[in-house]
Image 1 (cartoon, rainbow, N blue to C red):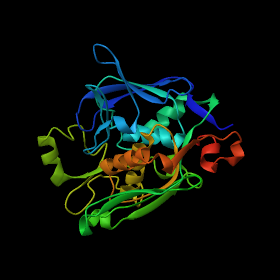
Image 2: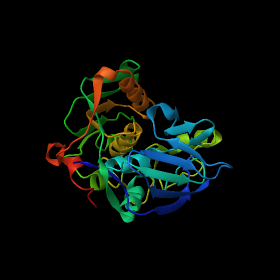
Image 3: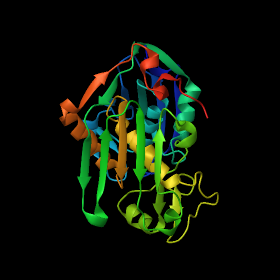
Amino acid sequence: MLQQRTLKSLTRAVGVGLHSGQRVEITLRPAQVDTGIVFRRVDLPQPVDIPMSALAVSDTRLASTLSNGGAKVHTVEHLMSACAGLGIDNLYVDITAEEVPILDGSAASFVFLLQSAGIALQNAPKRFVRVIEPIEVREGEGANQKWARLDPYHGYKLSFEIDFDHPAVDSTGQRVEFDMSVHNYSRDIARARTFGFTKDVEMMRANGLALGGGLDNAIVMDDYKVLNAGGLRYDDEFVKHKILDAMGDLYILGKPLLAAYSAFRSGHAMNNKLLRELLKRTEAWETVTFDNDRLAPKGFAQPARAW
């Protein structure tokens, strides 16, 4: 049986929110079978649980935000991406503010935290959402066109293409494909950082955003070049970060997907729109488990690999 996974022990981190600039403590704790991933706002007078769900996404401007009533948690996608990459099914995330800490701007710190806590197999089958009919969402036309799509696939594969009119981005890879059965998430995707442009920062800060952003937790570019002293971590770090984000956004579904995801200029809003369309089209997917590990896609059957 391909089993559900949680943590062996709890683990903690302290950081700041990318957009809020607020100090925040986060504690990742083991959870029982079929709990899913649940954020818990422990800073509120009465702690509020915010379960992960595509329908709980309330804001997609620059990040993915989950809500339960008036309680919110912003910028969940990097932690969700790490959970997707390592196959974590059940987890409590205690958080002391309304934004997940940005840490180094990638998912690598969350991968390290999760693997440090240890990954435990649970006595229940892992449940997948298997796509059996194509699902697609599109917006815009011509130069403004963007789209995202899910196709049937025995495994989990993502391909993404970006289109930025910027010298530093244009000189790198614009398209990447990542397949869980072939590649290593921790090595190939997790270290890709979020990125932004200096010309946008002033406007964002005037709107109360990017207050915690800087060269230690993002790739920052002026009109011509990358300003970070160490340069890029991958030759195609920009598009790899879009894959990282997509994996996090799609994991908000609450179960791992068996599908091929492809996208052009997509983002948090388009990814959530794709999930909502999938949920609406109940004939286009089914929930499956694997009693025999050998019948499961390779990337899911193997234990979570370290760096």
